[in-house]
Each structure stands twice: as C-alpha cells, then as structure tokens.
Image (cartoon, rainbow, N blue to C red; front, side, top):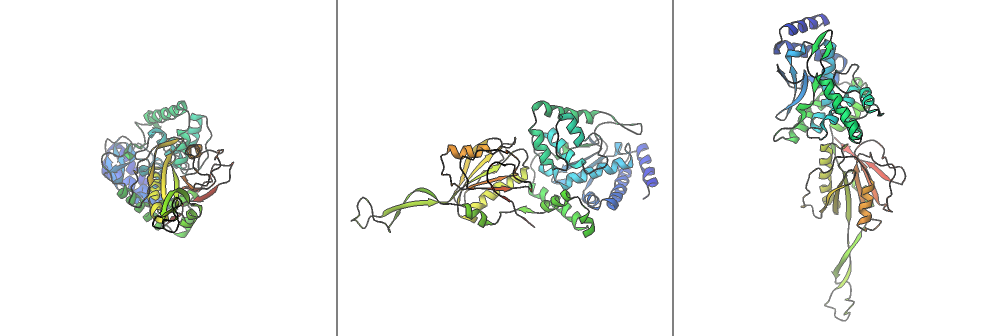
Length: 427
C-alpha cells in the first residue's frame, strides 16, 4: 500500500473511528515495517491484537490471561501520523524482543522500571514515541550521566541507586509527559501514546506458559531472517536473541569441582583405627576425622537481577547438590545479606524459592558474613551475580571463590585477584 492510500485510511479513521479501519492501518504499517526492519515486523505479525475504544493508551502490551496481546485504542489511533504509528509499533516490538512484559510483570519501583525499559528501547528508534523516556531526557531530569546502548537492567539498577529526590523527579516527569496533551499537526492527543500498566500480573498466572509463548514469538521471528538480515542486526540485539532462546545451565562441573575442598566436620567411627582410649579392645572402633564438601552459594537478588534470572539461579542451587555430591548453603544478598541461609544436604531437600531483596548491589557483605561465621579461609564460595557492584572489597583472606556472571560484562571488583566465569548457555 502506498503512503497516499494509508493516509486516506487514516483520514477515514479520524472521521469515523472503527476497529475495522484501525486493523487496516496496523496491518499496513506492519507491512511497511517488515520491509525495513524484518525482525520487528515478524514479531508484530505474531502478536495477537485487540481493538478497544476506551483503552488507557493508544497502544499497549497487555496480558490476556497468559497471552501477550497488542491492544490498540481505535478512537485515538487516527490522531497519529503514519510515521508516529510505525515508531510506536516498533517501540512495542522491542519490548517483546527483550521480554520486558514478562521480566518486569511483578517488579517493584514500577515508574523507574518503566523509564528504564523505555530508555533501553528508544535508543534504537529514530523518533521515539512522545511521552516515553529517552536517554537524553533521563540525564536532564537526574543530572546524571548514563552509558548508552545498555540493557533495561542496567538503567533500572542505576535509577534504583539514585537518591530518593532524583527518583521522584523521574516518576514526576513520566507522569507529566503522559498527562500532557501532545500536539501532532495541530491535533490534540489526550493521554499517553503507550503504557506499561498491562504488564502487571493479576490473579493466578502461568509463568512457564508465558515464557514459552514469548520465546516462540521471538524465535519464530528470528528464524525467518536471512543470514544477511541477521548480520545487519545491532550487536546488542544479536546477543539478546542468543540469550532469549536459551536456558541457563551449569558451567562445566569440573570448574566447580576444582574449587571444592574438604572441610573437617567432626569425627566418625572407623574399624580401621584402634580406639585410642582402649587400644586393647579390638571390638571398639576408633575414630577418624569426618570430611564433607560444603559449598557456600551467594545469590544476587538486587534490583538489576530480573525475577526470572533469580528463579533460575535458585533452581541451579538445587541441582548442585545432586550433580556435585556436595552440601550447599544458599545465601541471598543485594546491598546486604537478606534472610536466613538455607542448607541443602540431599537431592531431596527443597529450597524456598522466594525472591528476597531488590535494592542495590554490594559484595562486601558476603565476605563479612564468611568472616563472622569464622569459616576456614579455604572455604569454597560461589557467587552468582550480574557482576555490577563494588570496585573495592576486603575479602578477609577468603580466596577460594568462583564468580559466575549472568551477563557478558566484566566483574566490577578490581582490587583483588578473582576467578571469574560466565554462565554457559546452550540451545
């Protein structure tokens, strides 16, 4: 369809709003996106659509039971230009690509999360939808410099670490931009172009089903691309596709086995030893030192860690017991140690799989915790984190530590020798 034909339909939609005309506009716009940005167009084609006359925003991603759906307000869609509609749809497609509606469905700091997601998405758009947060606006509001081309987790973490006054300014800016009647060619647009309100879960949800459906949309869209089209994707998008379609698995078990020492844990009877107190009584067993492998695992549950990732890491802790034949002490942390440690001694033991914490990240409490427990300096320690935390720490001499990072970023700690690996991902 030509630009003139699309303009004609938009004019009809403006005069006589209807779901049928809105469907034509969306379908034609997705067709033009397919020609220019194949991956985004394929994602939009696979998203179910709802057309409503009174929805809060012109376009939004909402959960319809456990199915992610693109909801469009056909009464206001005609107030946008064709290029504004295309930008808005691409904005939503990027949210789907990075699974924002799933990752942040129940996240705290909703306004900051919304800003972080929009900043991450809008850097890939020539003209972001009005009323959404951009990197330049965020820096102006907070008077803070942020790295460009980073993930939503990075921007969310940085925003959560800001003083309360700056956080309030971000929230107020977002609210004001949504309420302001934006002008488009002299026409008034009431309310926001886009909202994240539909991401929040209501009632009982099936996270596995939601995850599978989102992966199906993204994986199916990616599979249609030619090698040339895949090569033209931004590097961060290619990395995202690599992690979106995979599951976290343990690194090579040998790497963890090498760090596992044997820790004295009392005495046990042995017929191979004489009884020291009564060596002439052969029927009495002697005693030998009992050794047990015990691994202390610290799971990062700070605000920069998505809920799905935290859940995966906690499940990983349970598998460690069976795969490595070791006892595991699981400790949650963010800027401090959170809750009580949970001990897994047998594969049948269960871990209370609940998220704790959600603030900033600090690694110092881990080593203070080990020091306070008066553990041996060679105690094996595994730290599961995204790598964003302190640059300077005092490890109190605990050197048998393996850092497993959930991101490709380098570990922030600079002042001590560290053993760092990245979580291996497989198809």
